[in-house]
Length: 283
Ligand code: PAF
Image (cartoon, rainbow, N blue to C red; front, side, top):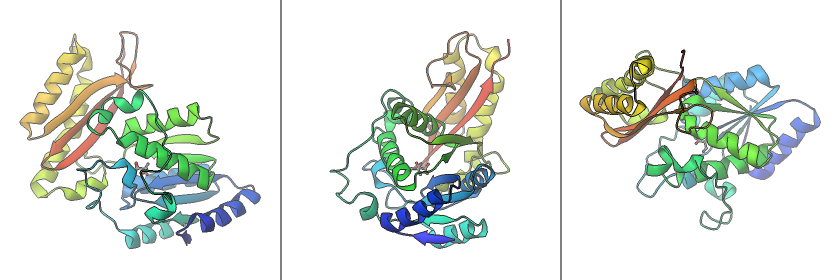
């Protein structure tokens, strides 16, 4: 496994892959890899001949009062895990390699509409930060395919829209959520939870799962969302949102829509968790 820290080393390695005509799969990450990330790497190997992973905690997607400074950074164990999976190339750049002109001077990608709802309301900088870095990483890695988790459902749709709108020659693959035994979606931020909070956290998935299966029992979606919010609050969460949306584009569902997703963001103490459940409505 080759590890590079600069875009010039990356471009030398990438041009070798391209010349050999092999199909390149790309998994962008912020490191602190868990089974969720490794499932993206496996999916990339299923689809592609060569797998490139980036590890970069992207400052542009963090707000001023967010956890950029404390975000878990574990490059040694990340490299070990990727090497055990025979990943071909890891790009682990410093901030100066990704934003050589500084963050404020950086040209940005804005994906309108989708970025301004749900998580975009409480994290207004987030999706532009993600789109900007993913666009730059796509340009550097030139992958045929890129792999994103369904856990970050809104992020997945933002990236799909960016790729469509900017006619990027990359196929975006969505990979299923990997959950702990009690159903908590794997996330690097789970490490912030103490043992009591960790137990509480499993309720997030349970509430969403219950709401999705009880969907047909409600006349109004707003009642279902309110009940889910109240249940989360009763388990000690500070709820940011719980919303049912159309899974295709996160618009409000109409009576004809059958592919839906219930999404939530909620705080336990100072940790913000997100999760979602996709479901189909059967008439
Ligand atoms: O999902 C993540 O880990 C990040 O948002 C991503 C896509 C690597 C961009 O920094």
